[in-house]
Length: 261
Ligand SMILES: [Zn+2]
Image (cartoon, rainbow, N blue to C red; front, side, top):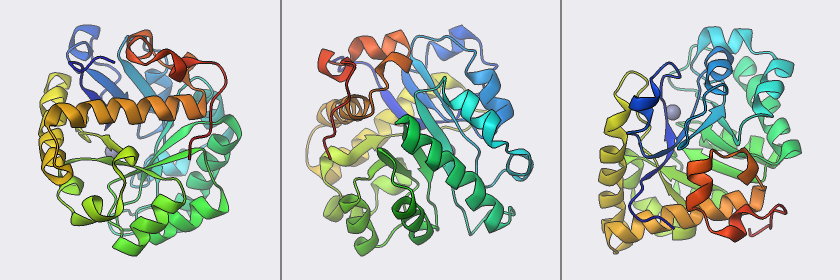
């Protein structure tokens, strides 16, 4: 695997960025906030950017306009579902509407075998309850703020955790999450230049290296290994862009996915 290439498991990148700008971002799993954004994103063909199809729980218009059939048509073309989830603290979207969208996304991911990047900020109990109701192959918890018991419960349910700087500082990450469940992310903002992504990933790797008592290079390797396992388990290799597929080990890209946890 390529130790030099950064891997960002959750970032927001404008799909209108030029190919030159996106080429500076390293390997990125880029999450979309609305189906309008996702429709533009799935047409892009950058070698190192894998786009998710999502509908963010805080996006009032996107949630109101969410159409299940349209979502599924777009998500069939994408290796990952995201960003979806629930937000009870900051969202002005009614909870029943948030849940309707989230449940549709989980049902698709369960049926089509996709990892799901899940916004769980302040809604940790709700998210875990929804995952029990509709188990998906690999739930990836983004912005995780759960208690230690909730975190252990999430681990027992097979969840992974994509970690940005605020989450990397939380002690529950060190005490309750096995390293093989950790992915590194920037949660890079939509308006920020993609060239900043590798710096942000490196900063999170530094924070995690302190928590995990290993080198930053080891954290990078761990992120790639964990992602390779997710790819193998879900069988999404064929949907990944060629530059990301090229740095994964052959067994991650074999046609039949293995269930590892
Ligand atoms: Zn996000």
